[in-house]
Amino acid sequence: MSDQSIATTTAPKSGGLEYKWKVLISVVFGLFMVILDATVINVALKTLQGEFHANTNEVQWVISIYTLAVGIATPLSGFLGDRFGAKRIYMLGLALFVAGSLLCGISTYLPPISSTNGNLLLLIIFRAVQGVGGGIALPLGTAMLFGSFERKEQGLAFGIFGIVLVFAPAIGPLLGGWLVDQNLWQWIFFINLPIGALGLTLAGLWLKEQRSPRKPKVDVLGILFSSIGFGAILYGASSAGEQGVGWGDARTLTAFAVGAVGLIAFAITELRVQQPLLDLRLFKIRNFLIANIVGWVGVVALFGAEFLLPLYLQILRGKSAFDTGLVLLPLAIAAGFSIPISGFIADKIGPRVLVVLGFAILAFNTWQLAQIDLNTDIGFIAFLLVIRGVALGLVIQNTNVAALRDIPLIKLARGTSLVNSTQQIIQSVGVAALATVLSSAVTIQIPAQFLNGSVKLDPSKIPPQFAAQFHQFQSQYIDGLHAAYNITLVIAIVTTLLAMMLPGWPGKYGQHAQPTTPAADEQPQPALAMLYQFVKEMVCLS
Image (tube, rainbow, N blue to C red; front, side):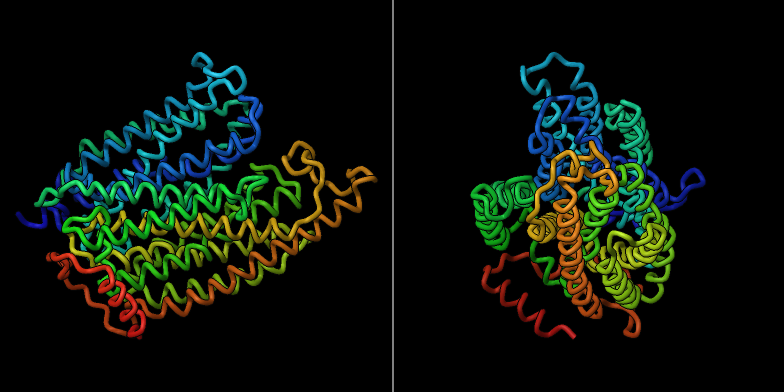
C-alpha cells in the first residue's frame, strides 16, 4: 500500500475545489472552537464562583481539567489515527468536543448533585470530555492539513491555518466577556454547537480516510506511563499557579516528582518497543530535533509572557476583562496579517531567516515591555503588541513547518502528536514558573476585593487606611512584572541563536518530495544509545 493511504499531496480537482483546500477549510472550522475554548472560559471564573458558591481554587478546576485532559489525550491521537483512520478519529474528537460543550452548557439546568456547589463537579467532568475531544482532534487535523499540501505550499497552508491559531485565543476573552456581561455565560459553550456541526459536516463530506498501511499494536505501557507523566506534570504546573499553593507545596512537588518518573519510564519504554505510542526516534531527524528545541524554548518566550500583560492591565490599570481583550486585540490582528505572508516567503527561502528575525524582534519587544510602569500610555502598549504580533507571525507556524517537513508521511500523525505534547508541557511549566516569579515579588497583601475585580483599582478611591499598603503593592507588582519579562527576554535571545540552526537561506532549501520511507528506525535502540545520539547531534549542530 502506498503512502497515499495516509496522506494526499496532489489530489485532482473535484467539484471545482482542490482537495487540499477542502482539507484546509474543514480543519479551520473544526479546530476553531477547540482553540477558542482554551481562553473563552477564563473571563467567566468570577461568575462561576457566584453561580456554584465555590472558591477560586475550586472553580479553577474548570480550566485545569481541560488542560489535563488535552495533555493526556494528545499523545494518543497519532496512535488512534493510525489504527482506526485519521478522519474517523478526528471526527470522533470533534464529536466529543461538541457533546462536552452541550453538556457543559446545560449543567446548571440539571438536578443538583451537591448541596453546596450544585453541579460544579458535573461541569468539571464535562470540561474533561471537551478536553479529550480537543486533544484528539487538534494533532490529527494538523497532520491531515500538512500532508494534503505539496512541500512548496506547506508554509502558506500553515500560515492560513495560523490565523485561526492567533485569532481564536484573542477573541475568546472578548466574546466570553460580552456573554458574561449579558448574563449568558452558558452560551460560552453553546456557541460551539453550530461551529462544531459545520466542522463535522465538512469533515464528513470532504475529508478522505487516511490510515497507516500497518495496523499498529496497542502500546499499553506507553499509554500508562504517558498518562501518568503528562498528566502529573500538567497537574503540578496547574497547582503551582493556584492561590495559596505554589511550587513549595507538597502537592505540587509530589505531582512533579511523579510526572518526572512517569516521563522517564515513558521515554525508556518508547525507545525499546517496536511500535511506540510517541515515536521518540523522530528526534534522529536533524531538522525535527532542531525545530522542536527552538519551539520548546520559544514557546516560553512567546506565550509565557502573554499572560503577564492581562494581569498588569486588570490588576494595576483597572481594566475589565473585555477592555483588556480590546487592548490585546492588535497583537492578533498583526499576527493574522503576517503569518500567511511569512509562510509564503518560507516556502521560497526556508524558515531560518524569518524565525531568527521574528525572535530578534521579540527579544527587543520584550525588553520594551519590561520597561512599562503604572503610567505607560495604553496606546503605546497597543503599538508594542502590534510589533509583537508581527514577530509571532514570523515564528509560530514556520517553526512547526520546519519540524514536520522532513517526517515521512507514514509517521506524520505521530509527529504532530509529539510536537503538540511536548510543547504543551513546556508551555504549562514555563507559564507557572513566570507566575511564581511575579507572585514571589509581592509580599504586601491588599484586600481581596481589589484583586478579584469587584472594586476597580483606582488610586483616587482607595480608602486612606489602605493607601500606603496599596502603593507598596503596586511597586512590588511592577518589580515582579519586570523580573518575569527580563527572564523571557533572556529566553528570546537564546532562541534567536538556536533558530540560526534551522534550514533555509543562505543555505540550500530544496523542494524535493516528502520522505516516504521511515528513517532507519524500524529496530528498537537502547535508551543510552538514543541519548548518546541526541547529545552528538547537539554538539555537531552548525
